[in-house]
Image (cartoon, rainbow, N blue to C red):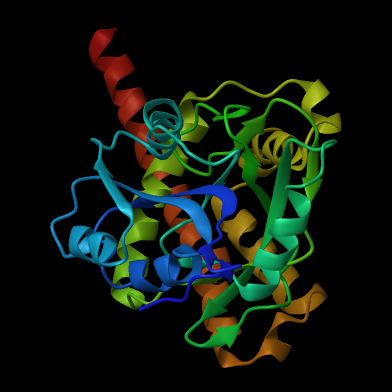
Length: 292
C-alpha cells in the first residue's frame, strides 16, 4: 500500500513523529498517510470521534489511532502534544488534507540534523480542484509545523492557531502539498464553522501588544489582524483582500479554478466572518439591555 525505505536490509525511518488531527477524514486521510507511513518513525492519527471510516483507514496504514474529545483546534493540538508518547526527536503536525512530498522529505531529513534550530516554518502549495493556486496565496503565509519534540505548544486560540516553539525557528524551502479531496460541500461547511470560531475569537481575545510586531511571522500577522484588519468594515475587508489578489497579485492568471478559490476564501469567507461578528455584537447588546 505504501513504500518503506530500507538501509542495509533494515527498515530505516526518519526520526520524526507525525500527528494528524482528524474528524471524518476517510477521503483525505489515505493521501496524507501514504505520504508519511513507512518514512516517519511514528504516525499518530489523533481523532475527534469520527463517525465515518477514518479509523479503518488509519489502521489499514499501520498508524496509531487515538481518540480525544474536540473542544477547539488549539486545545486539540495541545492535548496531542501533552498526552501522546511521541517516539521521534522531532514532531510534525500534518493536516489530513496535506501531504509530504518527496522533495520536502529530503529537505526535512537534512534539516533535522541541524543543532541551531528548534523548529521550522513551512509554506503551503495549495491545490484547488486540481489546479495550483499560486499567485496571491503561495508563500504569503507560513506555519510552524515541524519542531523538536517537547519544545513547542499551541497558543490559546480556537482557530487559526499557531505553534509556539521554545527556541529558534527556521524556514524550509519545499512546501507542504495541500489538497482537500472531499469536495465543495464539505469545504463550505468547514469554513462556516471556521468563520463562527474566527468571529468569536475576534470578540473574546485580548489585543496583542506592540512588541509582537517584531516577533515571529505569526505574531506580526496576528497584530495586524487585530489592530488594523478587524477595525475595517467586513465588506471593505473582503473587497480589499479579493481585489488585492486579483489586481496586484494577478491571481486570475492561474485560471478559473484559482479565481473561484479566491472568491470563496477571500470574499465569501470574510463576509461570513463579518456576519457572525455582527450577530455576536447584536446578541451582546441584547444581553446588556436585558441586564440593565
